[in-house]
Image (tube, rainbow, N blue to C red; front, side):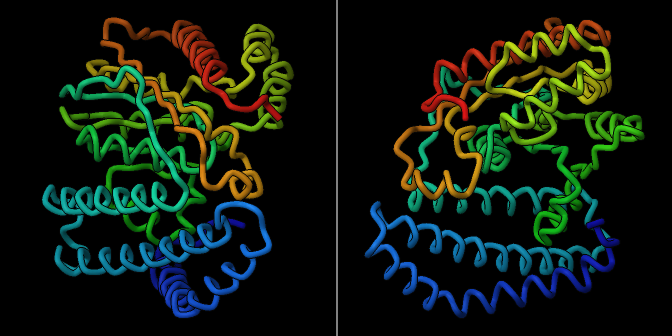
Length: 336
């Protein structure tokens, strides 16, 4: 289903979602009671209640977010001054608050704990962040860590379908982000948008990109390797076959970002555990989470970053091999 135009999303989709959220919140005592009864017959630590409680909390935060977006729209000249520095800062402050509350809720309800190995000290300077997709919540966890722990203002490349969520749509489009659609027939538009977003990074800004393009699954891994072979990229396919826990990285986006921000440091990010929660069923079975989510950040200075296409391709695969090895040492389950 194609994404409707902006005016439809604002005037029809957003009010409809808001009304639906309020209705579901009003019915939440019934849902929680049913979940409680169900958990009396289901082994585990009240996992159904936890899931329903989180769903209700998310609905509440969606409503809070949509109301906040409307208030900010009024505050900044009924939308006429949303691109001013004060407006952007206000939206970043709200996003930080929202992500912090979500992180606290996930921690209390699901037992999520994050351990950053060899935790780097915050340092000013423009930053390009390349992270692998590690399953549900990976993006929000990374952005939350950057904003809460490192006081960064992220610029994020996201899939266009996320704009079906009115809060992501509204807040995401008011901040310097890009929603993209992967179109192999029009890759130049995709890379141009990335380059434009990476331009003009300041000391506390961070450009965020997921070079794999989507969440990791073994099925997508096999498809990606087959695609590389069909296109004649046998060398890349052979390297991808040796990596069991990541998808082969796409180089055009990182190259566009590096070219647009040659003065920026580059950080690579890996997470553990989340790649094993590839479905709702698997997530439900593991609640509460017994394993800490380990994370690793590697930061490179501009002189360690290649500039040509061939060098960037080789460099990305080398880092993805390193990330794959790191995940192999931290995984809990064998790949499915």
